[in-house]
Image (cartoon, rainbow, N blue to C red; front, side):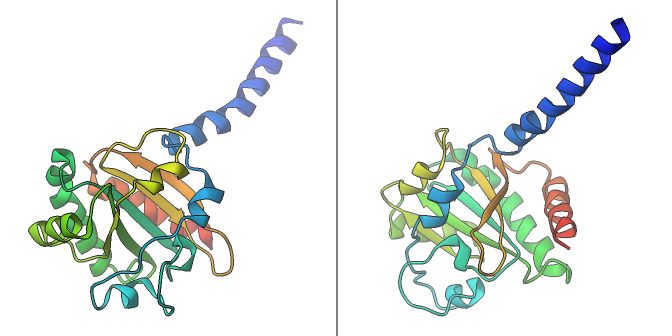
Length: 193
């Protein structure tokens, strides 16, 4: 009887573990349906639309980006943690760009939470960010998250043509281990096929 009870508890815990681990993977609690309907302003810089694979003019959704994985960096020009994290983000960009298995498959997009074009451009130019960075002046992206977004934060999305974007995982605060973060991206790509 005791053995049956132990086995029953173990089986019950196994059913709970996936739910607990998925919560750990998405501490922001992103609402995929809201995220997919969120419209992002058209990039202003030449080359940003090309990088994202956008062909139409006007606002776009994350699902329109031509990549297998999209890393959305949520930042603010005024955030000291975002400023301190800039070298890590640049390192991440460099590693993606140098790896033929990642280049073109993984793309980055910065969203300046409650920032204007001026503030986003200031941050991008100061830290020499090579990827598209776009303002979210009204903080609308926050509506896709259950938890308050504190910058920096990262939303990693799996993209498939013709399908809504899926939240693979989110990361709060700075990317301290760039290689570890990139390993999660590599595992995500490996699991796709």
